[in-house]
Amino acid sequence: MGGGGVGVSRLVKLDLFADFFQVYIADGKFRTDTSDIWNNKASDRMLAIAENLIAIGTARNMTVPVSLELLSGRPRPDFEVWEQVIEASFNVPSGEIVALGCTDYLPDAKRLQVSPGSYRALVSYRGLDSLSDDGLDGEDEYRVQLWPDAKCDVRAMKRRPDTVLPRI
Image 1 (cartoon, rainbow, N blue to C red):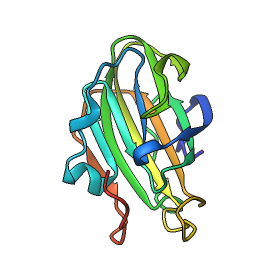
Image 2: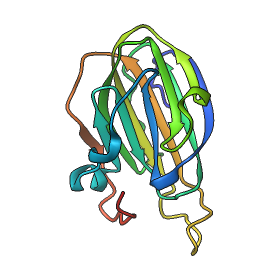
Image 3: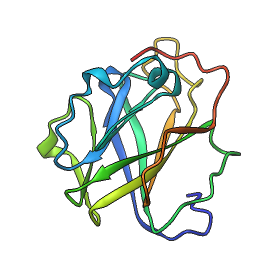
Image 4: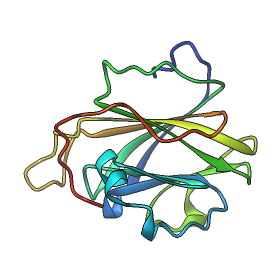
């Protein structure tokens, strides 16, 4: 799991439909207009943010595996097994986190109960170059590690210099 000695209070493995090459981790009552969060900088790092939402860019416009870990504190990044790691934060005022594809029906989203407040996230990517020629199949994986902490600016902790993926 890569928590680096930090206790994992919950691990959820999901298969999310990454329509438009993106999936969301958000506050359960988010009302963010996501049409304007994907600027060039966000597209290049494969991660866009809003006050109460993190949008994760994906390599495929298909169902992708996403692991969601709720942690008690900051994990140690495990750069040796992940190609890219981005740190970000978002607010969860409702005390509920949802995970869904961008065109999924919000009431049907996977829901996790947490303490209300600000959360940090380490979003890790791997297998981005494993796609089939038609882009439908691949071994790409996405992991989101969340823990309560103060807000932070988006920071690329590890970047793949050769990532050339679809613009969102």
